[in-house]
Image 1 (tube, one colour):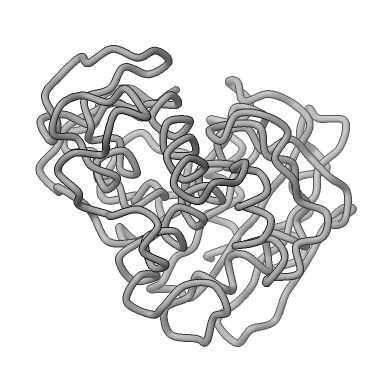
Image 2 (cartoon, one colour):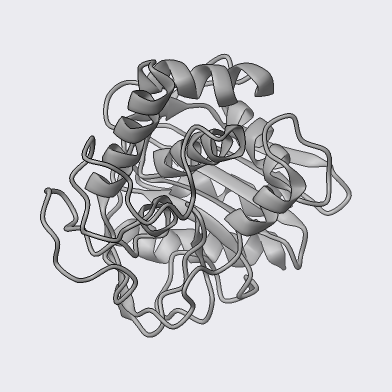
Length: 276
């Protein structure tokens, strides 16, 4: 396992850190796991967890038919739709490209609107809510949100190990109820097609309440050995995390080099080596 994980040191990056949690709970690491890295879209997993805390608290409703006029979403779109990119909202602007639940349109703007909704309903800035609802109870002392709730997270491998452990629906968690954690990694609207950024159109394009779900997508940023139930996210900053509930393995990799052709080859190779 150590040899597999040490592949990160041959990548064309200045800094990288990684960790694998195996089925017996053991953790293997490589690189400086307490070094903060920009997360880019891995931030969406953090934001999704905070939004689901707000759902459990009754601050927002997962399936409210009308969110209200505090955020400009397509008519009929719900919090659930925004979490799983099924709202019809454009990627980076307040415009409807489709009716809700017709197509999977990956939307950064949708996550910013979710944060705005939680901030409005809770009457506190979203970064404060995120800290109090997620980072503080999980002991994620080196994680912060420095801007957009879709892409401006900063964290460490050590803190993301704490987060991923708390997402396991088979173990106790101080953040979300068991049923909510199970829903987070369950495909929402399984028939929807869409695009995985950097990997093209997928038919279908399964997604959970925040994390992407691997399904049978080709090509993909996880490995060929990952089960279809694998869920997680990758970021344009050269970052990813995935949890394979079949293998009971979690892998987290953070780098300081933006996603490009190098990652399309390197990431699946590392994932396959880990699962081998």
